[in-house]
Structures are given as structure tokens and as C-alpha cells.
Length: 349
Image: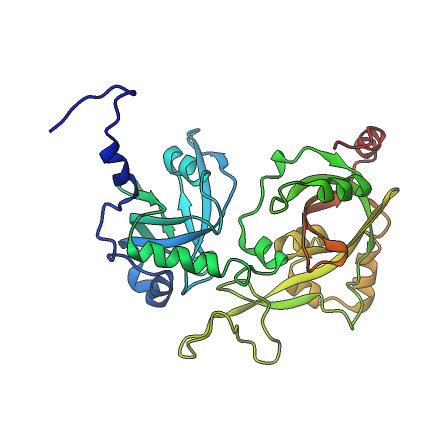
């Protein structure tokens, strides 16, 4: 029967159907199965049951033929895999994704396309026109997964810098608030929703940059699957490689802690990692490793005590010194006029 209803006529008996997947509740692949099957699933249309790890900012673009589009990357996880990317391209799925609460939401995504991402060397899922996503489905399998993420919410959290590595890069154009170091510390400590990070711009100096100190590890090995720093001796990831029959590859990545200082104080041990570090230094990891100690020292002094424009993500962390942690999202030498103009405004709280 087809019946046209006004917005005021809602059959209460139908509301429960919102939480029922359109496919059999047991008809899905775990993320671990997708990764394990690898290329054999390339191009296949399948169903996925997973928890939401993080939701990236929508990114807008214009194609070569002037068509406008947008893209949003969602990170999923379950009992078998710590991080798996799902890409949304259409307005409806992107809008839906923005309502999901990380580490609290479970989704059943029917008919998503699985493909191998050659650039990142991993499997990904893509929402297509026939995909239907059920949020927090009312099924036995989903309830088991929901209990898992609730029980492991604290222990399953990765280190903050790894979380930054896994999460899609933030749109810097959305960060406009300028702070001094002191203002940023005050705002973070006053932040009522302690789980939410604060994003801001600092016009500050890099006061510590130990890239020419042999006793300091500047480059570390990371797992290509989950982003964890890998034990140097074994070169294998203890998180991903529980099944010794299949080992994930590792890659070299910058991993350093720097101090940021302005006239109001210093932020100690700020994370400068991955591609952000490469863009800041102007060298890839391999190019950096080929440099002599004298070249590394000369590179360091190009940044030390030079006013920089630094985009930071700042949040409370019980593991960090002083209970606060900062991750550098971008760092470039500042335009003197721009820096002077913003510093005279004393920042924004």
C-alpha cells in the first residue's frame, strides 16, 4: 500500500524500521576480513558493519570541467581492525556522517564499493548511489559491537599523535582564531567539553628543534596499517600483526617534539609529525636522512627564533606534560606585517 502522509502524520509503528538494516543483519564483512582478502575484493559491492572512529571535515573542490563537488573521509574500526577509511562523495551521506559521534556510533552500510587505494597502499570503502546506511542498527551483531566499543573506549584510544596521523587532515581555512600561548592554555583549561580539541593560530618562535642531536629520534618507523610506531628491533607492528602469517609493511616518518614560544610563555613538547613535518622542513624523510650533521644544524637555524605562523590542535591529555598536548597542523615562516597586525590584537578568546 502506498499512502501519502503529511509531516504531522507519522505512524509510530514504522519508526522502529529506521534501525533495521535493509540486508540480513549477518550479511556483512568485518573490516579484518576486507583487509585480509585484499585485492580479491577490489571493485566488489559488499555490506559493512563497523564503529565510527572519526569523521573528517568535508572538503570542497572544483573539477577540470568546473563542476563543484565535495568529499568526506570517515574512519571506521571494529574488533578486527583499528582503522579503515570510508569515503563519502554525495551531500546526503556527508550530512549523515556529520551527525555520527566518534567511538559511540555503529553503522551498517549496505552496498558500499571496496577498492584498493594504490596511493595509500590499503583497502578503502566508498559510498555509492545504491548505498544505504543504517545508524546504530537494532541487531544482535550491532549490539555486540556497540558493547565492544563501550568497554574499550579508554583502552582502545591511540596516542594523540597517532590519532592525528590516522585522521584526515584538517581544513586550515576553517581555523581563524589567533591566540597567544597563554590565551591558548587558559582556553583549553576552561574548555567545558574536555573531549573537544581547540584549533587556533599562533605567531610564535620554535624554541626547541632537536633535529641534529644523535641521541634524539627524529625519524621513526610506522605501521602502514594502523599508524602505530613500530619497534625498531623487530620492525613489526604488535597491533596489526597478531596473525604472524601476514605482516603489514612499515614506513619511515618524521616524529619529533618541538617547543613553541611567544612573549607570554612556552608550549612544550608539541607534536610535529608526518607530512606536516616534511612540509615544514622542506625535505622528505629520505632527503633528511641523507644530510650531514652540519646540514641538519644549518636547517635548524633557519627556523629557531624566527617568527612563524603555526596552526595548532590543542587538547587536554592526562598523558601529556602539564595535562595539555598540542599538535602542529602547519608551520611556515610568518609575514612580519601580518604577524605584527595580529599580535597587536592580542588574539581571540
